[in-house]
Amino acid sequence: MGIIKKIRCRNCNRLFVPDSRNKGRQKYCDKTECRKASKTVSQKKWLSKPENKDYFRGPENVERVREWRKKNPGYWKQSKKPIALQDPLMAQHTEKIKDNSQVANCTLQDLLRVQPPVIIGLIANFIGSALQDDIALTLLRMQQSGQDILCLQPQTKGGECDYKIPDFKTADPQGSPKLQLG
Image 1 (cartoon, one colour):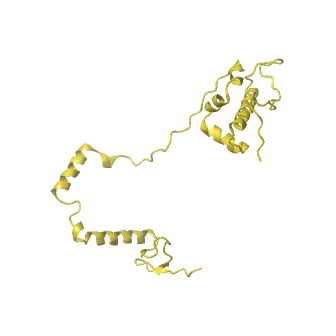
Image 2 (cartoon, rainbow, N blue to C red):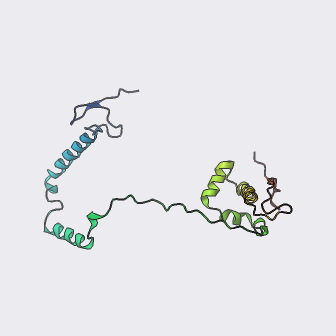
Image 3 (cartoon, helix red, strand yellow):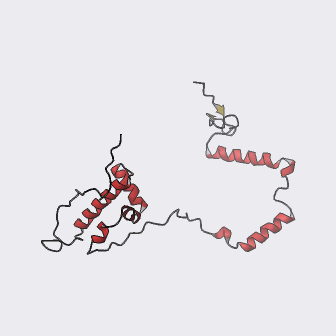
């Protein structure tokens, strides 16, 4: 392991370890006032070059700026509110379904497509599997449990909200072969 060489900041004279990706060129430490001093020195050095003396100066640049200001009135008066990167999540309305036979007969892909990707990802992480069969089985179990909790299934006995123990033991989908991995 090599020796870490510290250098002295040109603004505050404090010893610091330069960033490893920029150690040959970094002359100022990471304090805010030293970074500002570095920027000032850098700008003065850039403007001192003869090819940069009239950069963005002259009548053509003045006219260009005037035209832009006419096209964008009030640009500098706009608020600096942060812009949201995404829309807020909206709650979805749930409907009470009296006949559940259509849900049980749908294909595996149809059941997966109606679920938001976030739910599919959450279930996949929760059960530790990204296989469609496992996710679909878990979705069916969760749907059955949710219907039982919300009393959405027609009951054979008791009142309208007679609770029962959910049946999580479901058979494999018809026609799907069992697969044993390594």
